[in-house]
Image (cartoon, rainbow, N blue to C red; front, side, top):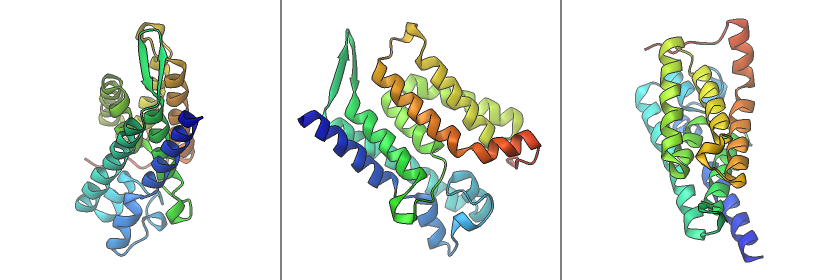
Amino acid sequence: MIDILKLFAALILGYLLGSLNTAVIVGKIYGKDIRSHGSKSAGLTNTLRVLGKSAAVFVLVGDILKGIIACFIGLFLEVYFYSGEVKDCVSLLAAGVGAVIGHNWPVYFKFKGGKGALTAVAVLFMVDWVMALLCLGFFVIIVALSRYVSLGSICATMLVAAISFIPFFGYTLYFNIFICLMAFMVIFRHMKNIQRLLSGTENKLNF
């Protein structure tokens, strides 16, 4: 019972922290609601296009930090699951999922947030840095070749989800559920981007 309460607390605290949408906050400081400009997404890429590099740096740092802090909260709550020699901190996983949910649907900003990719990567680094590096490397390659940030995010997300089910890596059921939830949220929030990619109207990143 105590562990269930701790998991619920991890999820809620992660959500409340994730709801501090950095792009919206920075946009208000710059005098703009980022959700009303550009692609209308409260995330790093749209901030870069609408507000410029300095604002994008603040969003980058903020989105990463809230994912990391949420995971530390999960680690502090110490709810673990053992499967043979494999150990998962399920409170960390719950807090990480909560942070991404909060970023996408922030309670403080009428549930209109970003797409969760950057915060999800920060959480993934806290959970499994090797998988996170694979994800980030694949993302960079796709973006460098295509100049589509959305395509890079979608492809990297799908790669991570696929890897998590390979028996060789020995991931637990809880980890698989965690990855599937994260992947679903990221891809779901990119549905409009997918439509624009298919129609050839998606904006490319200008290096």
